[in-house]
Image 1: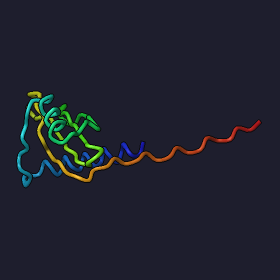
Image 2 (image 1 turned 90 degrees about the horizontal axis):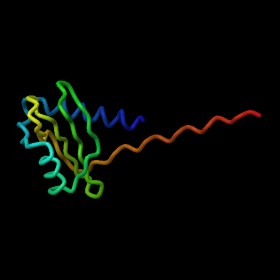
Image 3 (image 1 turned 90 degrees about the vertical axis):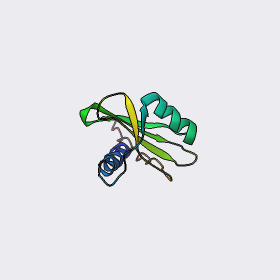
Image 4 (image 1 turned 135 degrees about the vertical axis):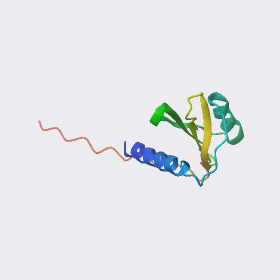
Length: 107
């Protein structure tokens, strides 16, 4: 479960970065069209989906072969759009930590 916490922290960090005025406004499109676009253009599939403040949708897509990734965020007006907030290369998921060994049962 630690890998999920790390992934969430990474997404939050990206969202905070993307909210800064120095980052140009991402392009937006209807949600399903946006997901289809990253699938066709980069062969990325959704890796994580969640909800942030104001019920805005967040989707992280990833291509396991190339390592490309895209972060799409729902528009603040709730119009059903997803906006490209960030993208990059060299992405890889954290591996989940190994489960601790089961305790020995005494007879």
